[in-house]
Image (cartoon, rainbow, N blue to C red; front, side, top):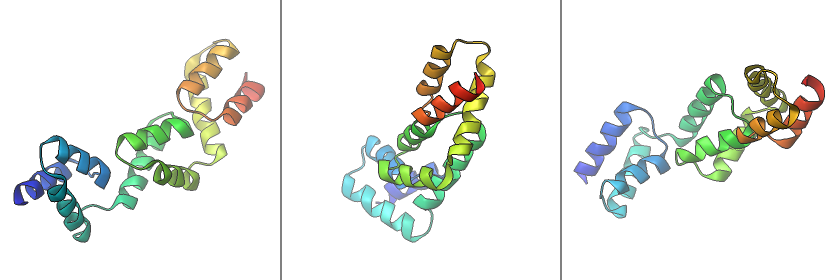
Length: 141
């Protein structure tokens, strides 16, 4: 168990991890599920893993530095091992319609003079919700 713990600590020194993401990485390195689950529980008891704090920090970073909509952000969160319902709850608490609209405007500004269907396609591919796309197309194009 100590080698699993040591590897987990090494990974946590690089950057914070969600328990789901850390579990996946440790399992990929050949450790048994029982060992990994024990280490994850120990790390949570020691406050070295805090899933709620990780979700909030990562979401704040994405909102500050990226231009994704609701579904794009949800996908990014899930790629880090965050459960779908946990990701949705965090987004509903942090991503207002107005904020998502501002992010969509940034995409629009970078898009140049594209026709409306191309703008809609670009926004959709970045995970913006349909009501945001509709508002952008009606009010800003």
